[in-house]
Image (cartoon, rainbow, N blue to C red; front, side):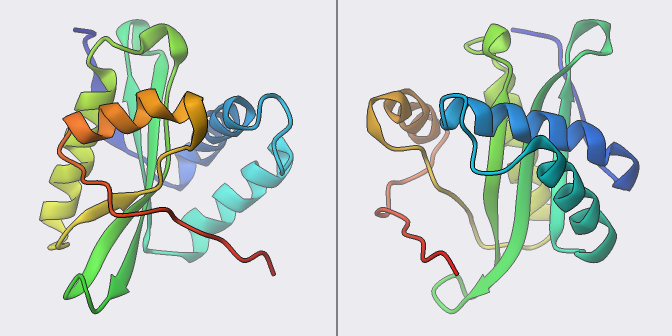
Length: 154
């Protein structure tokens, strides 16, 4: 298992969160993300400055190298009996996968959720063949499949 230090990010970490979020998008969209790295950076700064429901966790490995990032947003729903967390981005550097990093990040997200009194955490796992490994990982962490997520672009 990789030695990992996890911190809750603040506004001064926005560029680091944006870098990891863009790496995730680049991987998911096979080198053709729907937004630019600058758009991700600007949005990340805006969320930290304007939205108290936005939280990011950063995972640092040996040599204080940033190896993982999770963003989670507080939302509300009747089915959840109020507030709960939605994991929006979750990235572990490919070289650090299968070394316990993802498990540690999920555990820290779970602890954050409990501290905030949320009833649950949800996330959208990537689809297709590439998403099967991620889905299996999430199931091993205790997540349950509850159906596909859909989007309407405006």
